[in-house]
Amino acid sequence: MATSTRCSRRPPRGAPSAPLLSLVLVGIFLLGCSVPHALCYVRPPARANIAVSLAVTDINAPQQVHISMVGADKMRVSWITVASVSSTVYYGTSPGVYTSSASGSSSSYSFLTYTSGRINNVVIGPLLPSTIYYYRCSNATKEFSLKTPPGQLPIKFAVVGDLGQTGWTKTTLDHVAVSGYDVLLLPGDLSYADNVQSLWDSFGLLVEPLASQRPWMVTEGNHEIEKVSTIESFRAYNARWRMPYELSGSSSNLYYSFDAAGGAVHVIMLGSYTDFAVGTAQYNWLIGDLAKINRQTTPWVVALIHAPWYNTNYAHQNEGEPMRLAMEGLLYKARVDVVFAGHVHAYERFDRVNLKKQDKCGPVHITVGDGGNREGLASAYISPKPAISLFREASFGHGQFNVVNMTHARWTWHRNSNDISVVGDGVWLTSLFSTPGCF
Ligand SMILES: *[C@@H]1O[C@H](CO)[C@@H](O)[C@H](O)[C@H]1NC(C)=O
Ligand SMILES: *[C@@H]1O[C@H](CO)[C@@H](O)[C@H](O)[C@H]1NC(C)=O
Ligand SMILES: [Fe+2]
Image (cartoon, rainbow, N blue to C red; front, side):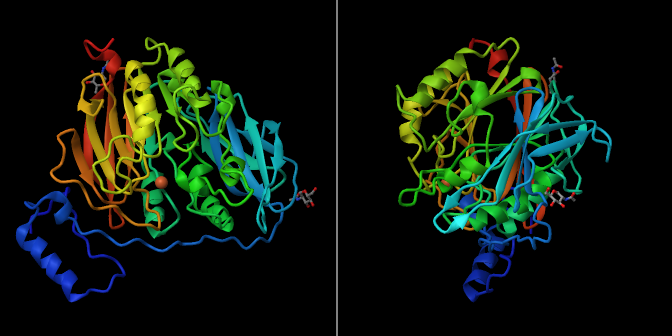
């Protein structure tokens, strides 16, 4: 049997090996991968939630530690404690030697019968780029470490949406952990708590080993909304995943932007589930944010949304259309290089596009809603494949966006081939700033 990376065949784990399934597998064996891609691929079933829990022996112990970038040289440390502790982080560049400290504040929220622990937020810095810092939260003895992102190119982003907290999520995280990434970009749908607030806690525990070491920059998906009776939307998300929105002039945690690699990359986090129509606060903020970019010093601009504007999967078909109609022209005129999306539980990469057509000065659209959540994969694609869709596959995995220099970036998509990470797709991207005729 010829092996093809585009057509990984795996025995679905834990699924009953029904005769029908064997027949399908034999059929695939005989046909090889000459059959259309979506037919050739055997979808692994969703894996169950792994429900990480913590036996709290110390009510002052930091849990669910995660960090996020705040401007060029600061980092927000967020953690939860059962008890009310002093929101202070002690840190330094040698283990156990804390030469600096910073204080912040804490809050908690309630949701029906649930009351969260104390959510502590402390901004530390100024910090040196590409430097490991050791830190502890409040008076707890446990030491964490983080590495600050580089202050110049190259920089490597891990990009993955729709994570959830299943066995597949764990596999994806294991692959991201060894990717050598500097900053994680998450285009929405984090915990899949779906109103069960303790699942936000188990998600926080699951991602802590990664998110306490590298900044995780997120924007919201539909699973973050959690609108129940009089509880406002995004209550848990906004309390737990505080992003540096005010620094980019945004007045909402649901959309913001930030610079990375000394300003060589500008990342715009858009909100698919807050108003985006012409004339709304987000729309006006986006106009202002794009106008501030100087492409001489910021050759790369990327944007993240949740519901994709370009999608040839039957799942969530056309859901991103109202936002595309409102905002695509702004991103196109500003020559945004790449738009990352989630929501569709699969991987798809498009050509450079605008107005649904190939356009050499338009952004590349990439869907990476394949983090591994409990809803499983979306495997039904519109056929035949439209020419603007260059690669599509319903597998779990993650992406890496390695911005090498002012003109070149390498994008790779890494499939979870069962529990092994295999590069399924890869392409060199040239910045629009260096593309003749686009500026
Ligand atoms: C941390 O502070 C709390 C409250 O002041 C105190 O009860 C606890 O013993 C302290 N723990 C350590 C390890 O110092
Ligand atoms: C940028 O990186 C690409 C890919 O590695 C390389 O071919 C090109 O020469 C680099 N450009 C500069 C100016 O270093
Ligand atoms: Fe979603």
